[in-house]
View 1: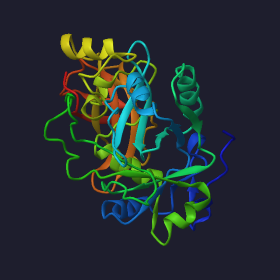
View 2: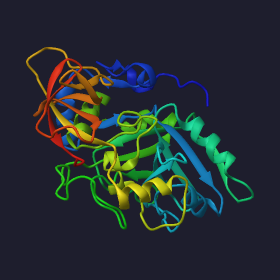
View 3: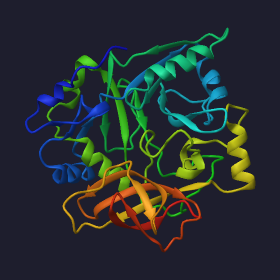
Length: 340
């Protein structure tokens, strides 16, 4: 994969490019609050063309991927999609796979900049199986839409986000009645990069800030934001959508089973209501402090069109539920997601 060129959608009036791995796409198009409302109304699309795209072909592709990852995907039918995780031997999240199969090819989208690492890992695990792996990020781009409709025959490969619905043989580490139920609808379309502008058509565009605000409000964890080198799925309530508890052995399964059966995760995801009396929001990555002691990390922060300043944080499990925290110098009231 070569370095991605800026998205052609950055030439749209009002577009403001992001930074770092988001530098090739727009964080907003001039009015982030309006862009949130357009997403809620199901009208806008989001340029996610900085996401990585990986393909796996060959007759053994699904059973092979099934043997290495957390989700049961060996019988995935054409058009069906799943959220799947690649874990380290110690059960830490390495990749969050947005995966859909079209009957001949398994399409996977991953966080920006991570496709080469995923391809290198998969290549090492091929052995003598009939599979071929390719990084297709240079050829294909991702568009996000506020919809839960699966792709139809003749449409681009379409990954439908299962969040927050519990899959078969999974477990809840968050609430049964989830605030995102009926509110969070999301899917990703994989289109030829050359056809990106045509795929958008005359629909309005929303930027990453608008998407992130709705994602945070839905308590939806994101790899690369809520994860670090020691994150296990239980801490983020990801067993809900991405882990099958009764499938065959895979790398990291021992940690999944041990924590689920015998203990509790050492950290927990919380939703934060941030003090909005100041003008600036704290930065994602800032320390979360209680009584002068660091108890966690602010992982995502946004300004929601209804709820105001909000965030997600991963904190120590034993942090008192009624404690008012300080995140990046800003007072923050926590709402429990993963219980103590």
